[in-house]
Image 1 (cartoon, one colour):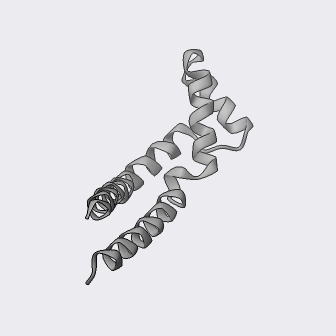
Image 2 (tube, helix red, strand yellow):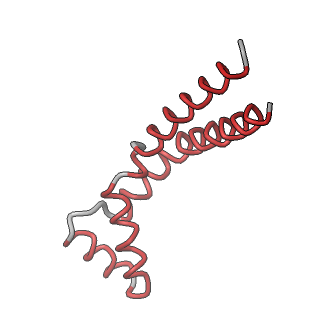
Length: 95
């Protein structure tokens, strides 16, 4: 396989990985919004955070923790693949 073909293949794979990262459950708008609410109310205490989350219809702290436990490994793998592809593309660009 020629270098240009390898480069195109790696770029295509990187595009696919980036789409998977963007669509990953940990990057959902609900979890992003919930993380913002937690950060805003951090000093107010756990109960205030839970009330603020519930008022906005966002996942509770427990639900966020569960999502994190269930999703962190797959997100780590996607990011590891992304970094590897970015490095491969850089190497192929130099050839």
